[in-house]
Amino acid sequence: MTTLAIKILALKKPQRYAVRRTLMAAYQHLQEELLLPPLQIEELTTSAEIMNYTQVTVYPSLVINERLVCVGRFPKKEEVLAWLREAAEGLKTTVNQ
Image (cartoon, rainbow, N blue to C red; front, top):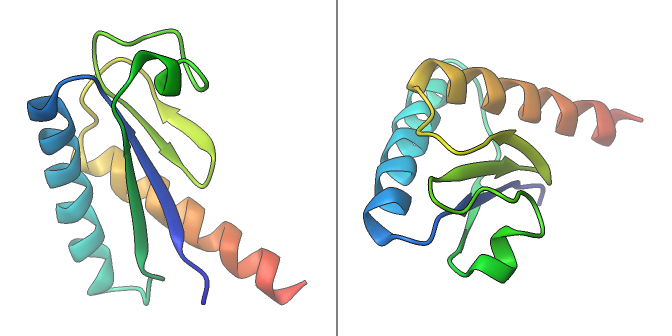
């Protein structure tokens, strides 16, 4: 089964929690209008892991399907909605080819 691979990059647990809450709110909102694949969420919590994606380690970042979509800030729900839609469409295109 295809999944949306999500990586939350943040050193501090409260930052990861805040990003996860926004992500889950957006995901649940989209489930009402689209049939989204399940999420596979991974939290990267060390500087070494985070620096594989970005040099910014002070604030959270977000990766969806190996694409860095948000760097060094807390994303807004509307942004996450757009990124999840785009990622889901990308998965559909890949599966249909």
